[in-house]
Image (cartoon, rainbow, N blue to C red):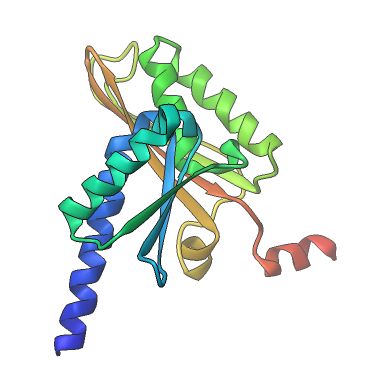
Length: 197
């Protein structure tokens, strides 16, 4: 029972760290983080689309971040490593944030969503689903709009293992618009087999 409690506590802590990093670096195009224990401490790799915003001049911000994580979450000797996301259009969190940013700048949400859908598909995705919900431009009531291109898996094991999910919020005068993005980066093997026949 003590082992189960330890794993639950550790899972909650990892979730809290992920939420903290997402909130802190959302504007830097935060994607996700990976944590691994080493002989020297806990290595935390943070993936963002704009690493310069996280690192700062001469890497001072990294030292401050490591100290913050140590105090806030009780992690001994956190070793922070910032990495740039290689293909920004195949990362659901980054695409969601970019759509939200463009809506905040006054670009029509349909135009913005369709632009990023095309970019994602051009980058080699099998499919993409974008859901925009809230007081969208030109509507007095809250609406939910769905945009889809290609092939999307909604449930089952492949939905968990092959689908990348992301979300962001656009803060408008009328209220908050939520953006959810799902990207199928690669097709299931069965799907490829059917296509080849």
